[in-house]
Length: 70
Length: 360
Image (cartoon, rainbow over all chains, first blue to last red; front, side, top):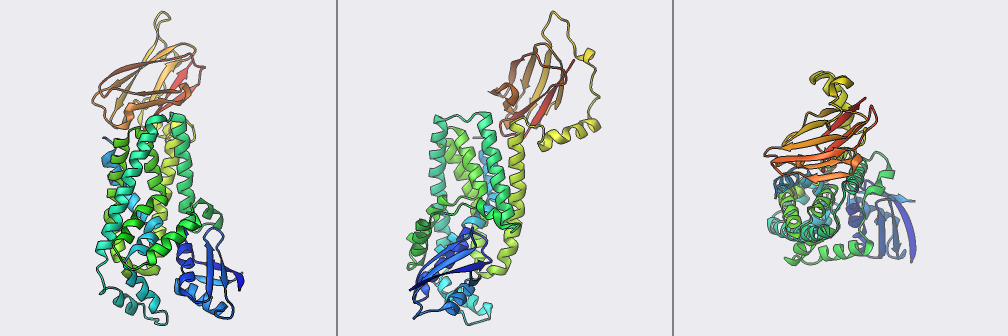
């Protein structure tokens, strides 16, 4: 299990952070997502044997935002 | 009961937009689960039209939206009653109301600049609900569609009031009565509902691209409202830098009679000079009064079927605050002032203003 921080773009309200955090319920292998609109960051705790950077970034993109490792 | 209609109109226009910007996500979360699922299920499909087309036929979103709005209406009415009740225990002085209005104005302007993405620093103007609440809301929103979810999430909107709602909450506090506070918040929230309903109903069709334009429009409206609130707060403090006080010189130079000389405003030494101010529905007339300096002056406030907030009369420099009768005459004794003193007055909302100039 590792924890990684990503810089998230295109968030425009606190609800966007909530929307991004829902990845935690949808992407297998992701244990916890904490997104902050104020900081423009999200911290993801995930099982690196089941999911990787690319899937996480793609999941954020599907929500309408951009993400890149901070 | 006088502010109920303005509250409804505020809700109908700006309140609806501003609330939607803040609470729209919560509403989206409460909509039928399959709408979101359909969108999620179509990640590989580049054609957005297809995803939209699959979203509609399952359920009619009108029922969950209506339930969401009903719950919101009930929750804010209860909040209004509680605020009104709290307001009956603490009376806001004009100064504290002015400070509150300035703070709300700054908050709204900051929020508008945040929405316009002027600088990341403005993100600090957003009130983020605690993480355990967002997690709880999210989990609730993801459950199977039932009638409870939109009802519950609608009630939760009290936790994330928008800037305009917060201003209205301050007004509810100012009513000093549970019934009046509840009525005010009910009228305002009812006013926000039609726009909320329409936009939410078509939200699935609007998509993210239009959302950005929509946000910009809301930001512009909130910016204007914020500046107006800020200005009202400054008026209420009697500040010379408010818009009305800064532009009064220009307006009066064009429209009003020239400044009288000191001798013209003097009264015989044996009598107290009296100046008269007409308090009418549209404000104060004349907007600029002249009085002799260095002696006590009596200011007569004359109302005649005056029902607007101009009746709530404030002279910040004297800490004078009085709710005038709708028809009648109230006298205020003003202690001697130095020549050149400009004493400003305003209504308790800071909307209508005027000043007394002391000539020596």
